[in-house]
Length: 266
Image (cartoon, rainbow, N blue to C red; front, side, top):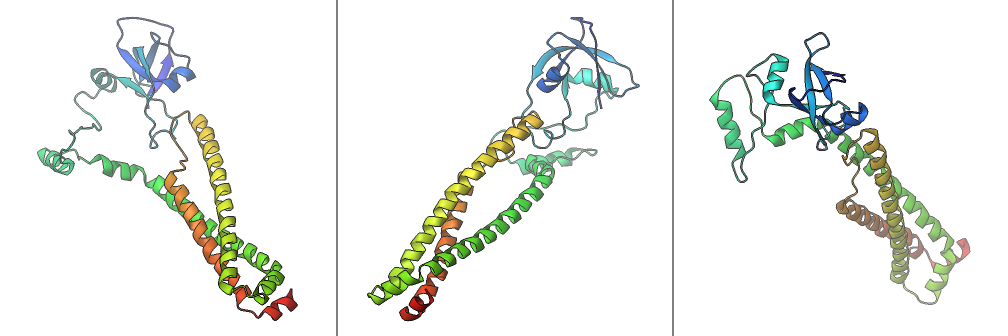
């Protein structure tokens, strides 16, 4: 790691360095300030002048580490580390439409001592933690769906028990069982829609609170929670489907029994 020491010196002849905004705010650095950088605490130090302050792109692979980064010119970095003509890794940008796999294979065949990887493979390797979190969230979502279905079924069964007398009267005056079932299913759909709207509002509030807390905690513009239209459509669709199924199952209790039996039980 690079150890950063602040000095009160200023010299226009010193090489320049770029520091990120968080570091500038943490150590009250400004353009033109002089700092010393060393690869290790006991190594030789070199002085640099702050020439630029930049805002790094939001990267989930590095945003949560909290490390500070600086950017040096390549000759200055090689001289500081004492490793001329050596790099740990570098990126090669291909033109749009180029065959990335062919370029990777070609680079790997040129020489030994390094390995080329496509950017999507690197992204998959660095996103394994987020993939595990995504699966965990899917499991929680499945449990929530099952629990909500049971809760909705209990509500509809209670509603059905309360309306046995009404169902018996409708049956006696000639209203068919299909009409009763349709009414109960419609009511279940209305309950599901109201619950969906409440759930979407709650999810939106949780989304905003999560991003507000963690963006300030890690001082980043990274989006930690994102409520997409696809998620909303999936949630509402599942809710309506459950409403129809649960309403139909609850309505069967009203149309299967005889009207007089429903009247006595009511």
